[in-house]
Image (cartoon, rainbow, N blue to C red; front, top):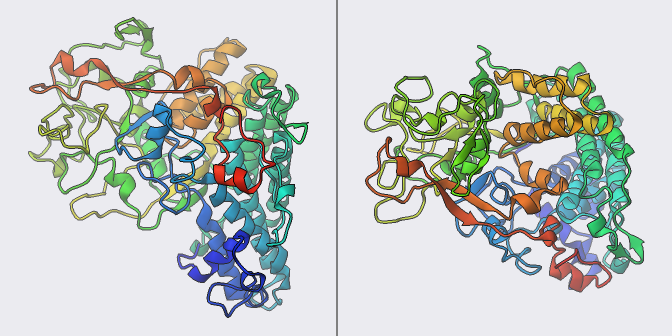
Length: 614
């Protein structure tokens, strides 16, 4: 995708501003180029399309608010997988229950951002056929550009429904004198049907895969991307939040129910769509990523920083943005930065052991764990064995864990960029006063849980100088489709062979054994949910998974834990340091399953039905 975007196209999106005059609205902001002129020039037309991508969410920005740019990632910090140390981050308002219909739009306005993208896509679709054909601008190229815009229109609609549920479907640009009161919320199944149909149209117009010889196309959607979005949307539609949710039975717009009765066949439809995506993706050369040495840790770790690898279906390019590394780099590394992306003890406890067994079955009243004796997990004491991932003296609770743990989590005793440490080869240490822990003067910018997120980090990144290679943020990958298919197929047909096959492919890639045979449908569901928690950790999936499963009320209303990072005079053998400690008592009620429609939208269109509880 071209890096340069003509900024004067941006305010074409401000066509709905009530104070603007009609003649001005037909022009771009320089006042000289109107829409007809834009779509008579192939350079301008392509730049207009490129600018339509600017509203893609910046999911790689974890600790920041929107600040007037496209939606950032408030979802990972609002899930039970991370505690976000940047207090102004909007996820912290979500976690303490203080967000509202007013402040939900001040810093995280997913509604207007996506609808701006939709309007740009509509303008492009309505006007691109005006472009004169030439040797360089062929009908095939115009069709491909139109396919991109159709896909983006579908994707922006999906971003809206995953937050707000039923929404107005906008499939055309609306003039300033249009009837905005007619644009009301449509039943959720109609929203999904629209997205599915758009994906089907886009799939017929897009390349099967971005040509490796044309790096200017990297970051643009393909036929497989459209199929992946279709499968994900249908998975959401089949899930309990939208499929027969009795809590929303009375939610209506203009007398029409917005949520349908339960239909079991929706699971089969979702499974079929995911399998079609997998089959066509693999036929096009997509496959699970594996490192050159097939090392199970590197298989997973490299997936997220080897750009354009074969597992990737679609990404947003991050440009020169390095803060995903900055905000996860330990304090003890050279240079200045922020250590804010802190995984919770909750997810640390859920990583399996190397033998594929879950280490912890539950907790006693004092939060001491109920240990699975088959796992080999040891909670106390320190190891006398050296390991490529940790030093002698590391707490046994971090020993012999599954490879994805070592690829994703930083913990005390871990070997991390040893050549940059002072002294050299010094392991990570997260207690107060330790190199990577809270400063003794109680200054901020430290891990509140005693862990940092290693996943997504690049091993060559150096905070001293703030240097590192450019990366991409994966929006769709084949591994997710495997798990989507397994989940939907288990719900429709039970734990048949293909369910085992695709979950085991994910596990085997990371060095884990197959699932045990003979699982019931309920047992398999639990296994798949767990596999999604670990395999897709921090990828913006956990928040929406627990919502669509309707488990968020039970999960996100509980305490989030870390270890005791606030005690002084600890060392790697201090039992008190490793005690599970409440980091935050989170708030979640039924109304939090759906975001509130922004108050400014309700004021503009009083016919819009607000989501329950807001």
